[in-house]
Length: 93
Image 1 (cartoon, helix red, strand yellow):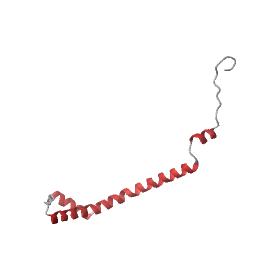
Image 2 (tube, one colour):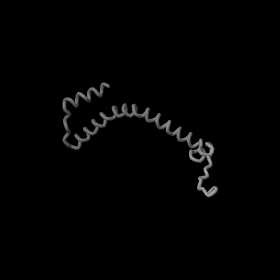
Image 3 (cartoon, helix red, strand yellow):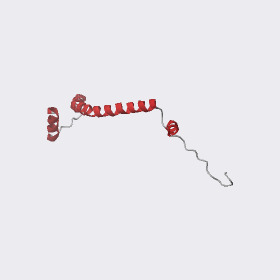
Image 4 (cartoon, helix red, strand yellow):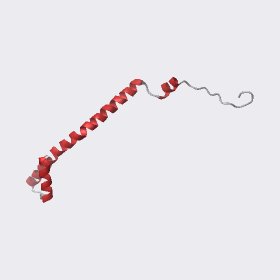
C-alpha cells in the first residue's frame, strides 16, 4: 500500500534473466537439435531403401511359403492371371 492506495509493485525483469530462467541451456539445445537432424536424415534415407528391400524380399517370402505349404500337403491357392502378370512385372523392375 502506498498512501492508502493499493498499487501493484511491478519490477520488470531483464531479458537475459527471463531467457535464463525459462529456456534450457545451450548444450541441451544443441544436443536436441543434433538428434532431430540425425533422425530426420535417417528417415528420409531409409524410406527409399526400405521400399527397394521390400520389393526384393516379398516375392522370395511368397515363394518360400508356397513351397512349405506344398510339402506339408496343404492346399495351395493358384494365382490368378492378373496376379501372375503382376508378379512378372515386379520381377522386371
